[in-house]
Amino acid sequence: MAMRDPYEVLGVSRTAADAEIKKAYRRLARKSHPDVNLGDTGAHKRFQEIAAAYEILKDPKKKERYDRFGDTGEAPGPSAGPPRGGVPPQGPFGRDYRQAPSGRGESGGGGFRWSGDVSDLFSDLFSGSGSGIGVGEDEDAAAALTIPFRDAVLGGTVSFSARIPRRCTRCRGTGRSAKATCAACHGSGAIVETESLTVRIPAGVDTGARIRVPGKGRTENGDLYLAITVEKHPYFSREGDDIVAEVPVTVPEAYLGAEIEVPTVKGAVRARIPAGTISGQRFRLKGRGIENLRTATTGDHYYRVRVVVPTVQSEEGRRLVEALGTLYARDLRAGLPRGL
Ligand SMILES: [Zn+2]
Image (tube, rainbow, N blue to C red):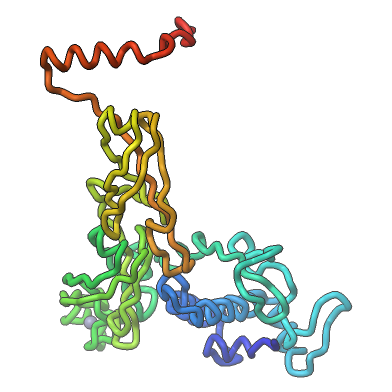
């Protein structure tokens, strides 16, 4: 597949300055980042294309080579491919992007592969200098949003009010009108507006994810990016896409084995524990964890058994438990060291 004109991909003119190219890249990369487009495979492809285009235009040497030979497809050297035909096959983003031997990413122009690990780039894309995430840099805005565990796991809609710094329309964000400080924004160039928003949370979102709200940025052309924090759940713990939770069982259940009801994020499931189960033993319910839209896989549910000793004290209890004591074949602590 021939690579598209990188200037066209980034939507900048051939005379665009470096800062303008960088700005266009950051904005487009944020918009099409796989993490804000869960389940949208087209976004993944657009993101790769944008990354590849920027890889050429941010590098003076590659840019010059493209500018000079791009249209004719002439190669400057025997090993490098023609600029139009493709980027040189090294990872265009250094540590963030590298040529993976069997990358999940599809082959972009010229055969570079995206390793799929964009976490560093991700935080870089959404980080701004100083006042918050990307705010003040261009037309986008950012806000933090904490969502309930249930909505993060199962998906849902969350309503909240966000404080968004809107570019001052009186001074167009300059903070100055005529020769004085802008009276509307007091020179800051922005006016903070509180807006009630409702966003759809895609299932599988985790802390650190970003959700894009189109048209709600600093200007109406910009977007609002929500930095997501997921609340902890008192019972279910999350480990990636897996869920871990503890299930108490009785001594007879552990000794004899039993079918017990195990709570999972999508409802209770009947599951077996084998005879002779010990406290702390972990069992897996495959595919009962979190459905991850980004990787299109589903995690597992692990339930850890806790054997609970009865608390009722009675004569009969004493008799039963003393009988139980005769069932231990050996001294449980026989093999332990006495100390260091
Ligand atoms: Zn103003």
